[in-house]
Amino acid sequence: MIVMSVALDNLYGFQEFSLDFSYPKKIVRSPLVDEHLPGCPSFRYKRVNIIMGSTATGKTTLGKALVAIFNLHCIIDSVIGTR
Image (cartoon, rainbow, N blue to C red; front, side, top):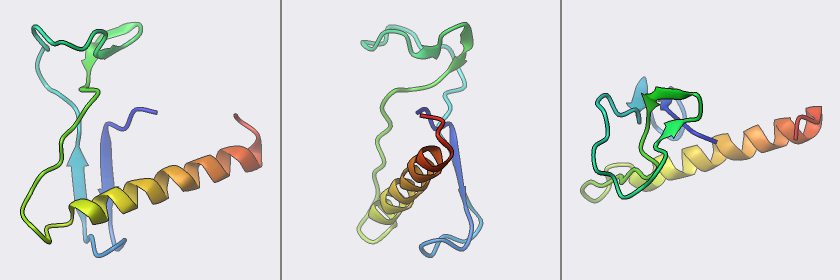
């Protein structure tokens, strides 16, 4: 699953938080191949994002929120049978 943006409000202490993972310009000389969606060469994204910051700035909490979202998505998929 490709996540292009995240918006959290009132979850794990995040209030009106949004994060955009898209990459606005053409990727040149990347060691990773195919950093675009098949059939959509102008829709670019990075396969790896590094989240860094000082101590107690919410990096781990953001990771926990993403895991919770992915787990919920998997549960919903298994219940309605789209997998």
